[in-house]
Length: 294
Image (cartoon, rainbow, N blue to C red; front, side):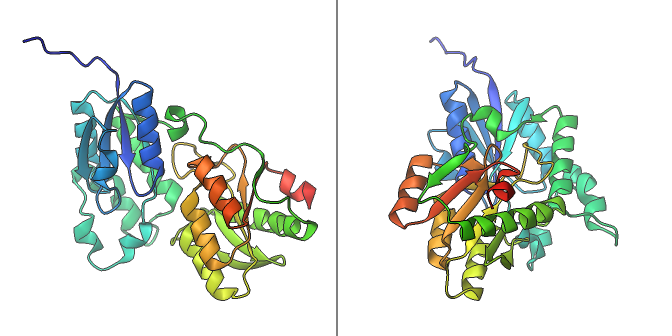
């Protein structure tokens, strides 16, 4: 019997929560790669990768040594991290047991979780993960390298052009969101009448929007989500999709402003249809354009 040799190059996706890692894995498959998916426990859904990934394995969030060994078993030398990691779970009861690291993970993260000077900022922890994978022979690359066309283009994405008052809110929120990004706090803010209603921290964008809805019962507020001033495109790239719009609709938000060229837009046709159906406005602007238009 002849056995076909699969000579497709293998690439990896380290999949956390959400639609993004699925879209990236699909793009890898369609580009002719052999897709090796490592799903983060309590975040990814294995069934989502049926028919997409050639191999799927579960790993814990801090099992870096296990992840490297699995990738190298399949010949993976290039990979990407995609999806949201629910960092808030690190502060819940039982987190130590749930996220027990392997030896490689323990060495990598020990100094970040022990002592008064421990640095647990997103960029620090994610950057450390990239370094450890590189040491193990796996280069982490931007998800957009494997899925071209994900980044939103400048312009009116959906809805009606902004009024002067709404553009002023965007400009106000833009400066605030950029500063929060510079501090590595979060990337999204909710504003109305040039007042900050809610600022994203560890909870993530959707919960930030919902909190703004609880605080601003009258609705009509604006959500601004931008990249960090020195955004590393290998991780934590701002991402919006239909779920973002659903959170806005339920909370009473009116406008979503995102950064063109540095924000991932998932399922654009479905996204625009949902925004139009619920009369939500979405604009993608460049740095400096928001202030200039205000």
